[in-house]
Amino acid sequence: MTDMKVEMQKQMDNMEKGKLDVPPENQSRKELKGDETKEEILDHLCLTDDVVAERFEEFGPNEIKHEEKTVLAMWVAQFTGTMPVMIEIALILTGILGDWIDFVIIAIMLIVNAVVGFHEEYKATKALSEVEGKLNDAERIQCWRKKDGKPAKVAIKSEEIVPGDVIVVFGGDVVPADG
Image (cartoon, rainbow, N blue to C red; front, side, top):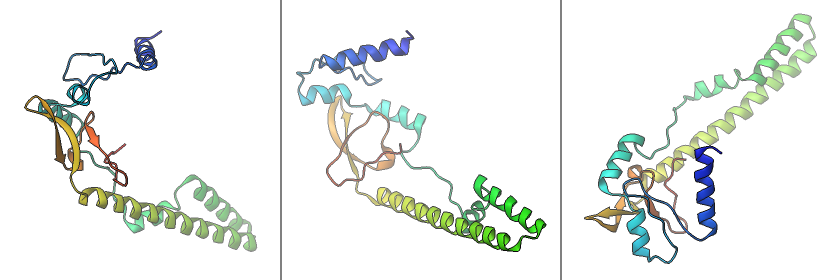
């Protein structure tokens, strides 16, 4: 077995025995027994300011990255995929052969395909913008981090979350994750 498989198997065995082994990178490996208090678990899991700064430097802000497309670019993209190109080739061939009824049917099919594809992409882009707006405008996120060597609940912006943070989430909250 590879080292990764051995490590995964060890983690699975520990989980079955009720043991948690989730060490943050800023502490030595410590196995949890399952009878720890909330404070002991938080002390084990919470990140220090130094680790937060390192991870923020390594991973950057917690935000969804995507390129903004113009409406024209979205429309043109509807004619450049595999299926539209095949329909366009069929359109050209029927035009060359002079089969005008099929030409009109294929042209309508191409236009309907582009309109439906554009509409769906436009809706998806608007939905993504709304989600980004909610996350950006959301209240601060509650998070457990180490302050002065002890776990403390702090309020941070969603962009400041780093991998390994212990986030407090309530029902109805927007989960601040970028995937």
